[in-house]
Amino acid sequence: MNDYKHFIRIDSNNIVIDGYSDWQEDKRGTGEIQLSGEFSRHFQFQLMTSKGQFMYKLVNGAMTPRSQTELDAEWAARPPAIKTEIEIVKEENAQQNTQIIDLWESLLIAGVL
Image (cartoon, rainbow, N blue to C red; front, side, top):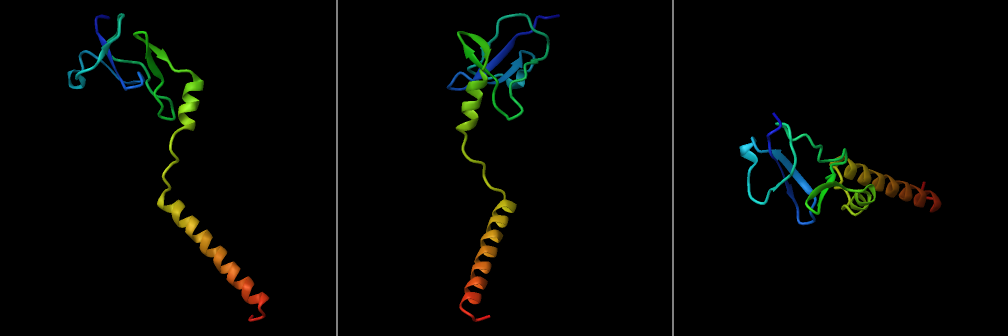
């Protein structure tokens, strides 16, 4: 019953970005790499970490786990997260509160209040 073929797709850095079993005809395309070995019906490799990073790379034709050092470097190099509307509003409110406090302090120092 282990007569299924498994295929992977890689990106330009040889990072494994997708995988499937040959019965999944809707996933077939060009550029897939067939893995050698006997496999069950379902492609059961977990390809991503809990952070959404791809866990494997293709090295000398074999699907190889990426090192923690490589994953950490990739994570550190990612662009900063886009701020949510709530975060933006909170920052604007904090700036306005600071401006109001500065104004009140100026008025107190000047003896206006």
